[in-house]
Amino acid sequence: MKPKIQRGVSLYSFQEEMFLGQMNVEDCVSFAASIGAKGIEILPEQNMPSFPHVTDAEIAEWHAMLDRHGCHFTCYDMFLDTKLRKNRLMTDDEQVASIRRDLELCNRLGIRNMRILIFVRPDILERCVPYAEELDVHMGVEVHAPWYLDHAWILRTIEVADRLNTRHLGILPDMGIFMKHYPPEFRARFEREGARPEITQFIVDQHEEKVMCEYTIYEVAVKMQGNPAEVRMAETLRHAPYANPRRIGDFAPYFRHIQAKFYGMTEDCHDPSIAYDEVIPELVKAGWQGTLSSEYEGNRWVQDAEDVDSREQVRRQHVMFERLLGETA
Amino acid sequence: MFDKYIIDPDSFANVGPEHAPTGFSFGTKLGYYRGLTLSMLEDLAVSLDGDDLPRDAISFDDGNGRIGLDEMETAYDRRWNFGAPAKLIVAYPGGLTAGKHTVSLRQQLRISYMPFPSVRFTEKTIEFT
Image 1 (tube, helix red, strand yellow):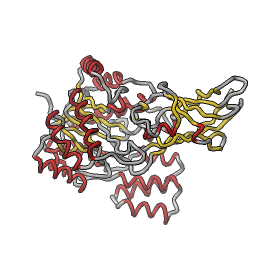
Image 2 (cartoon, rainbow over the protein chains, first blue to last red):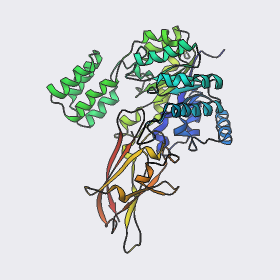
Image 3 (cartoon, chains in turn orange, red):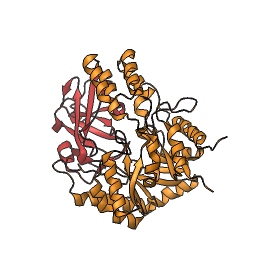
Image 4 (cartoon, rainbow over the protein chains, first blue to last red):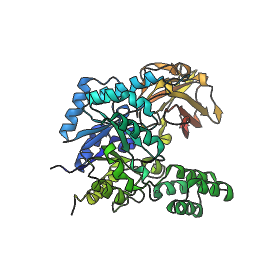
């Protein structure tokens, strides 16, 4: 029997190496396979140069490539360019048409989960539900920090899904919402940009004590007359919430895929920031089935000081997953 | 996120006749983790040795035809792909002189899910020969 919680990787994780031409998509898939992360999440607008005009032949090539490595697709990350035009927003009809285009490509790729950007309006998604049902694609609204599972904006999507009694609309949590400790990579970057250690320690301590961010920002910017790097660091607290992992069980019926965000792993394969040691037991307890899909986002925080090694970071995260999922003794 | 890589410092060249260059060009990439339709590139602003160069002096070529910045604003069917190198051509009579220059590039992107324009910026010092 296959395990309920499977491991995978989003190609987002390798953006640094792909951007620089050091890895191609097959290198990413091959690496994912080597660490047992067989589920592959893609961003067609990143990984498919012919988007949106992806041909059947190209889709066949993707599947042949996945087969070579024993991998499979898990999730399609869509975008919606409501501001395509400078002079006006997309109309509602245009938004629905754009999402329908993505649902159709998702279906042609044989993918049954679509990450919906969090800013997409619930009433627009409601209009897309019939297409999602017909194409058998679950539209999961990305619950991304600073939003959280119980946020009123997210509850609007849940309300639509409940009212329509559909299995094709729900959410897709990004684990960045469970930032229990301030990421050391953020702090180190701001110190390289001139933030003083006594101030960065204050910000870290305030985050550790879960002081509401606006107090800390005012303290740093006004009372301490913080320098620009210090103020920027304090302002990151607006996007650094720690949501309650115990709420996971209540929302588990609404999601089938998880973006396993992380900013950096320690050498002994622990996440110093995101509370996976609390989140994964809650997922197990809820009997949740789906894929934990690595989303490494540390590159932008360390690239000024060192060569980014996304593979090593992802490898370490999967050692942690194996440990927390009980795959290793 | 990719700010530091958006100017290729080894790509600078003069354009036009060798004895009377009409400008210069350099390689660039889109500082974003996915491709974008050209209409969402609000500005590609270049400065040389501290002077901002005029917007209408700048054109873009990703290998699919040269296009000016104003024309890009309505290019709804053309994308600049993730990680794909392109060239910026800057009208600058006389071109670059030999020696050290400071060049900056500011990419202003209209990202629909962001509440404000998204700006990528880098400045590079180059030795032009």
